[in-house]
Length: 77
Image (cartoon, rainbow, N blue to C red; front, side):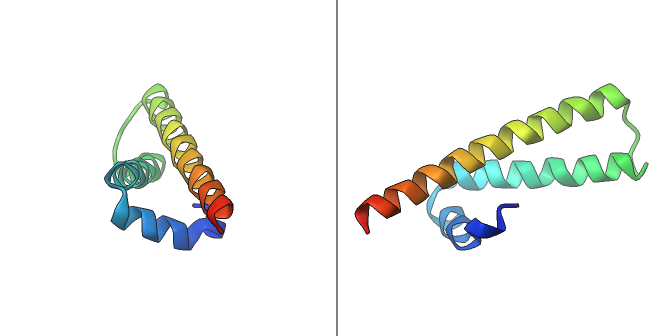
């Protein structure tokens, strides 16, 4: 996820607890969705769609933090 921000992600995971929680929750949902789609766990299509929407919401929040952090760095550089 967001390979162009790999270094910033690593930094934020150690310095921003909220970011870390969002990142970990996103990864957890990603793995659960993969398990459901591979039929390792059983869920209805509707349940999987709800999880996918939550994952997307988290990804949007993560991206917003990354872009704000990048913009803040550019103004101080």
